[in-house]
Length: 522
Image (cartoon, rainbow, N blue to C red; front, side, top):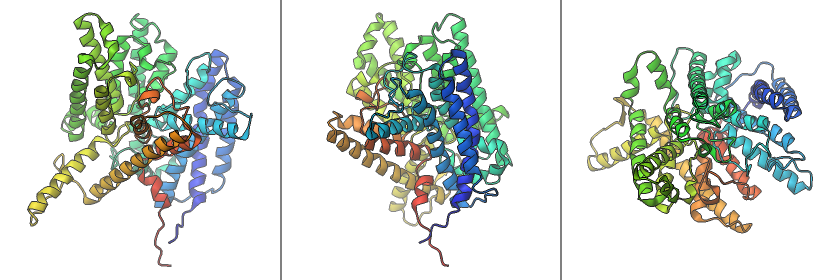
């Protein structure tokens, strides 16, 4: 068994990614200047990131990527981005009440500070949305730091490597393989002859939706329908809705805003869970490509069915706060809005909340847990297993049952009129098995480790913690709910969940494939 990976080539290109990632820190630096907060934090962070990126880049002036080098680049690139993202948290937390900031009180406190910062950063870039900041407020954290937190999710939504392929010619050469490793879903949809043009098209669509969304949010504010949705909040939530991230600079998430804002957020969360390649076809006038897509129809149907089910549960008393609606009409609207919002938010892994669903009854929680398992579409920014994998898996099971009774019949699996390649089916089954194994093992570990340190955690909450991180969903149940925090976990559990967020965003196989040796005849 030999590995034979040109580490210097991959690490050199990781340096290029890190160097350009530093430029994104100009956004929070501008915010810091506007509010006169943490200016030095982002100035230093930017300089440090550039220096590290340039140093890594010089390891190999002419990198050549093979299949394993490409996997290593994608995996290390995402981990490096999360490491870079920790720098502002550590610097901003030094000497402040931040729960992720640097502490020099003792070696254990110092290690915890770094792990906490890495957890928050990984949660941001992987668009998970799990947090351990605790109480989020502008008294505890600066506008600039919270904007950086929001921005990390926007950068991770469509993909850091996809963005680099769109702007860097040296990565475009191996762009197809890199995007295949990073893009969510079992296969890559190539929209144009050149992969760099495909990457640019996806990012332009993503940017366009974000811009429209920010404008509409701020328009509600200007119209008097959303008093606290000022420009800062509009931009901040624009950065985390389209990537299905779920971070918010408001402690109460979207519950801090009016019903008008909540209704506006819903369709944009739903859009984020759609394969962005379909919007490319719509822009070209090929609307039937979207309406005829089996994954899109299943996604829309799943939202409708699960929403209707949850709305009935809530209307029948699954959520005590709904009683505050007063009239039957008020309770009905509230139940429908809460149900629609939370189903769309958790089904595609956004993680926003309009209510503390951790306080809902067990029936409502089970519906939400079911929604968490579904996931968004392939090629979307949504997390989870993905709709297309469920479709293919069910069709494969049905085929196996049929051929068991009819052994002489050859029956291919079809999706949208096309035969699904057997290699793709095998990949889906391998992913599903690994997903379930990692999810189950992690839930058990989190439960046992929490008991070890005396942290009271139910089995249901441990399951939700594992699912929330590997599925990049964000909130769990109980103390891990939408207004809760992951702060009380031990460092061991936090490190495991950092790993789960990382492999979950890259859909497991690209990361684990690095640890598999290769037979060599030499």
